[in-house]
Length: 606
Image 1 (cartoon, rainbow, N blue to C red):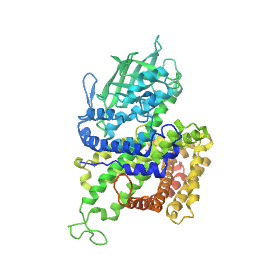
Image 2 (image 1 turned 30 degrees about the vertical axis):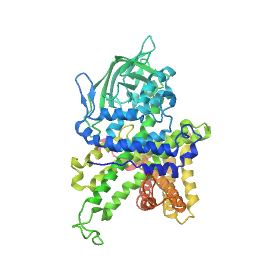
Image 3 (image 1 turned 180 degrees about the vertical axis):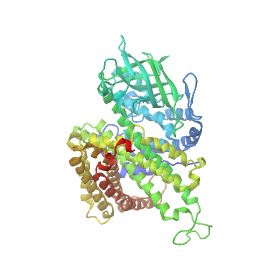
Image 4 (image 1 turned 135 degrees about the horizontal axis):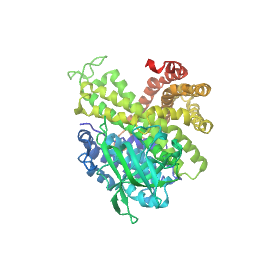
C-alpha cells in the first residue's frame, strides 16, 4: 500500500527561513501564528493525514459512493468517521474569522494543510475543501443575517458547502446557463434547473449542505450580465438555527468518472428549491469569483500534492527494486543487482519531480501569503500590490502545477515499470486522480487564456511589470556572488525569454488575437518556469544563509532540516537550473511562431 509523510520540515523551512512570515505580524492573524503554534498544527495535521486518511484512499477508490433510490448518497466506509475526527480537530475552520467560530489564523495555514490532505486522500479532501471557498463568498458578499445563519456551522464543519456553476450545455461559457430563479413575496426565490459535476453535491458526512448556485432571475439580461448567485440549503434552516424541512434539491445521479471515486460528483436537480440572493441581482459572477479564486489556488495545491505523494512512493520503490548494474560498475556487489536508483535516467526522473515539488510548494505559499495580505492588511498600497500578485499568479499556480502534477504522477508510475500499471501498488490510482485538477475550476487552456488575455494587460500591465521587476532585482542583487551564479544566470536568461514573449504578444496579439490564443499555454508554462526558478533562487539564498550561520546541526531529528538536507536542496536547485529552465527557449520559439499553422487549415481538414 502506498505511504505518505507530510513534508512538515520543508514547509517550516519555507515559512520561517525563505518567506520570514514573522515580518507580517502586523497583519491580522499572523501574530497568533507563532513558530511553535505553526509547527504543532502541521505536525498534528500530518499525523491525521498519514494515519487516518492514507489507509482510506484505496478503499475509497475501490468502493466509491452509492446513490440510493431516494437520492441519498453514502460515502465509502470509514469516510464518515474520518470526517468526524476532522471536525473534532477543528481543521476546517482554522483560517476563518473568530467571530464565526474559526481560529483566525492566516489562510496560508489552510493552504498547507490542504496539500497534506490532498496528498493523503484527494477524494476525501474535496468534501471540506469547497467549504472554505463557500464561506469566503458568503462572508464577502452575503448579508449580516446570511452570515449569522449559515457561516458558523460551515466553519465548524457540521454543514458543508458546494459551488454549482456547470450545466449540461454550459461549462466555461456561463452566459449560456438556464437555471432560473423566480422571486417570491417574502424576498426568497424559487430555483429550478440542473447542475452537473457538483463535487460533494450529496453525501452522508454532514447534516446539511449549503449550495451556492448560479441562476438567472426571470427577466434578467442575457449572457453573463444577467447571472445572480443564491444560497440554496439542502435542508431549510429555521430562524433559530435548527433544521427544518428538506428543500427541493436532490442528487439525480453520481457521475461515473476516471478517478476521485471516493468523492460524490453529482448531477443536482433543483425543483422550485428555496434560495436566497447573495449580493446584488445580476452580480452573481463577481460573487462566485470570490469562491473560484479560492478554488483555483486550492486546485493548484492538489497538483502539487499529487506530485509529492507519487514522488515519495517512487523514491521508496527505486531504492528497493533491484534491476541491472550501474553503468560505471556494481554499486552493491553483495546483491544480485543494483537498486534502480543508481541509473542516471531514473535519477533524472526523480529529480525532475522533486525540483517541481520544492519550488512549487514555495510558489504556492508565496501566492497564498499575497492572498492573506490582500485580505487582511491595513496598508492600502501593500494590499493593492498583494492583490495584483495574487491575481497574476493564481492561473499560473493552477495551470502549471496541475499540468506538472499529472506529469509527475505518470513519471513516478513509470519508475515502477509494470508494477505501476497494476492496482496493488496504488500508482495507477494516483495517475487517474491527478488528471482531474487539470480540468475542473477552469480547464488549463482557460487558465492560460486568463493569464494572457486578462491578467497581463490588467491595470496597464501593473502586476506583470511588478513581477518582472522583482525577479530582475533578485538577479541583480546576487549576480556578482559566485555561489549564486549557477542559479541566477540561467534565471536571468529565462526571464529575458519571458519578457521577449510578453513584448511579442504586445506587438502581435492586438492585430490578430489568435496569436495570443495559440501561444497562451506555452506562455503560461514559460511564466511558470521563471516563477519556479525565482523560488529556487530564494530557497538557495536561505540555504546558504543557514549553512553559513551554522543553524543546521547536521544531526537531524525533529522538524528541522539538517545540514545534508540543506545541501541536497542546492543540488536539486542546480538540476532545475541546468536541466529544466532551458525549456523556456523552446517555449519562446513556439510563441513567436504565431498562429499561422494553428489556424490555417479549415475545420473540414481535421
